[in-house]
Amino acid sequence: MNNNKSYLKLLTTVFILCISFTSKAETSIQGLVQGQIALNSDSEKSYLYKGTSLLRYDDEHNASIAQALLKINSDLTATTSVEAVLNHTNSPKSFTHFSQAFIKYTPVWSPDYRWQFKAGMFYPEMSLENPDIGWLSPYNYTNSAINSWIGEELRTIGTEVKLIRPGRAHNSPHTFTLLGSVFKANDTTGTILSWRGWALHDKQTLFNEVVPFANYPTIAPGGIMEKQASWVDPYREIDGNWGFYVGAHWDYKNTSRLRYYHYNNQADETVLARGGQYAWKTIFHSLAWQYRFNQEWRFITQIMDGNTSMGVGKVNVDFTAWYAMVSYKSGQHRVSARIDDFKTIDKDMYWQDNNNGDGNALTLSYRYDWQDNIQLGLEYLYLDSFQANRMQWYWDPNVRQQQLLGVVQYRF
View (cartoon, rainbow, N blue to C red):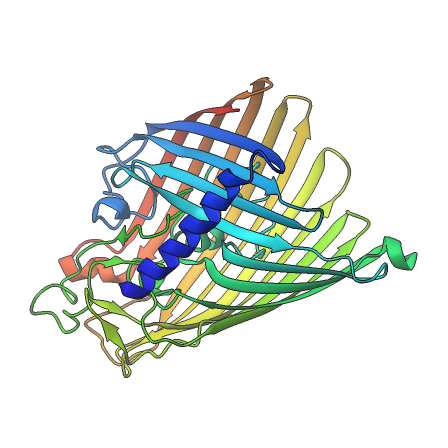
């Protein structure tokens, strides 16, 4: 926990720098508040409230301030900027903290190439689904399974270096980017994916916030893995090892965009920290592609494939997921449709703790920009999932769910 306190001090310092330079630099301040109500939900209790549902809402918890954030960006110099995103959530309980806070340096060393250095807490740019303010999606209100997981368990707390070869500087329609990062405080990545499985929601975990999941008998007192807590602290440094990721981007005329990432947190899966938090060795590949047909139509897809393990042969899970989305925007209206498919495959020797799961989902969203700063929306989601660990309570592992959301969003 001392490591987490030191990271907290660093993030606080970055945010204070944002505020202190406001009067000395060009600063922009943006905010967003988004309320959601489940007009239709089911009795499956959400994982956020210790249930096994893979959705954010249920019959008992069917409304929330889903998003409330403040983004501050200060250009300290022509080449240095500081950015912080402060978020508030009220599910599963009221909590306010950073989702991002970093400093960025973009020196002008060559007319043919651009360098970018980033340090702090930020999202790796794997997603083409979440380009809006505060890592939100301008398409669907509920993220894909892949980006739901990234939002709850994955954040870079470290540094990133990026080298860009702009097409314009080389009289070419192609822009290429190479990047790499080293980071800490992501040792528990893979915990909730193994125990709960993939999920679909729009919740972003904030710094020092914990994410709950069901207290399965195998991890309850007396269970075969009772040392594992029924919650995860996503930004916990446990083993002292540095993780890394490398990536490559290709952009063609701002029409076609391709992003590949290889991620390895290099965690020592034999280490157990206080509070029931294991280090999970998590390695995966991510490939995302976006194609813009014209100003109105675009197609986005992403696939992720990897493995996570904990303990000496205790938990070993392969995971894979993909989604494909089409979105149409005309004037004040946007309509988006997405299909998701996901799977976890249990590869360890403990039959009592079965982490197998799979599912598919359909998401349909409509957004209407009623005024410049007010948006109204509706979203329908159908989810068909199988989670073997539901059988620990002799429940049906196959669950079909439907959710209809009504949304009001205000920007300032």
